[in-house]
Image (cartoon, rainbow, N blue to C red; front, top):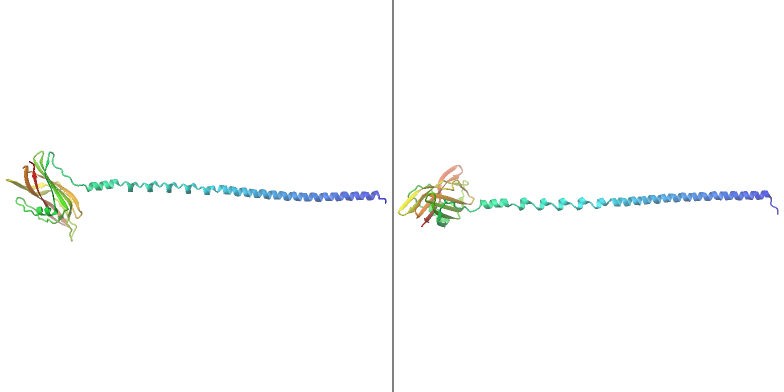
Length: 268
């Protein structure tokens, strides 16, 4: 069978056309796949970027986790002002002043004096000496139950300079005025107290300056000391002193004898 050249040429052209068409189709598929891969790569890249971004966000959250202000709150932990409250701990000044205010009264005899008599007394003896009759001196109105005491003591000091003086010191423990239904009574100790001394065959009497003058007694109990200088230089003797004060009740003022002390001395 004889094939013409024209037929062969047509067949060759057709094959070439088919190959050409096949090549185009293959390139289109390749390009499509490349495009898809690129898109997938971008998506992966974006996903990685998002993952990185999330990682950074978690890493940056350390500022929330390690919040130094919450963890090391020095103001709450080391609150020195609350722990070392000096005003409560070191209240020594208040305690010391209270101790000084309540300290026991002490005698103050003249220079060169020697203790020549000393004795304690009871509330009953304090009242008895107040009621003691006077023979040489005038004693103000006696109200011997107006002042109460827990106890008392007297001391006699002899031979004080510059002259031979007899110095009497009296301490009253827990002294207070009696309660009243009409007022809160106040008693101001007067400056002069009547006294009588006896040293046979000599007797003397008068009023003596009270070094406790001006002291106030009220219903609140207090320890007081009274110093009295007596100008009597005999070496031995006995005596009685009446304690005088001004009693205030509302607007009323009355001078009273509120107590007394019987004492003795011996300078030999």
